[in-house]
Image (cartoon, rainbow over all chains, first blue to last red; front, side):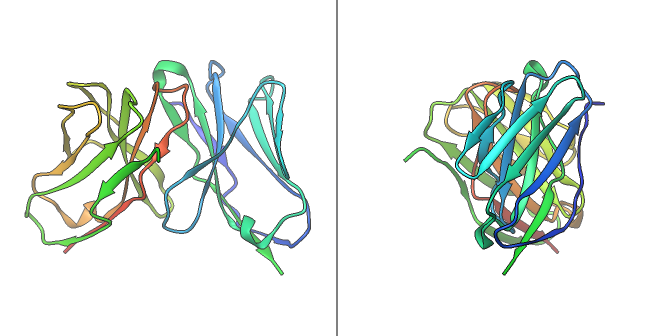
Length: 109
Length: 113
């Protein structure tokens, strides 16, 4: 069974801090990697795709480590509005996308 | 605006009364899928469709039906709802299964009493 594992948290982080969390995946043949953000009782929304070379979008940086089979998300200068659940998503072509259960992040003033 | 539209947003029904949740996308996506989300269990796939007239079971298909008569529409049908189907449901679509990011509808909160 293909699995995607995340620490559920919650992680309480002061505003302005840098926070990072990882996600491990079991299928070594996985080719597609994404981070989604989900606010309470709302739909998941794509935050960023994760590329082999790593990528950055403003305060957010995503990295992929194929050897150890994990992806990471780093948030710099965290804002109150960053409070959400962050879902790790891994795809293996014909196998579809597998979602982690999410990491709950709370940014505190 | 590119979007996935689900209706209704909230639905309260009684056991055994057939219901349909509609889903429509305007992005010309080949792939569509239904998920349910329950506390502690994450998103679980119910059914998916690779193209018109092609549907397949996901991880939790029991008690559900789907159809894909048109590319843009992918309704979810509960022939005889039961209380264990009380959940938050999401429809999603993408260009290709497994490699393209999914676009989600804004969800349907179903309560079966």
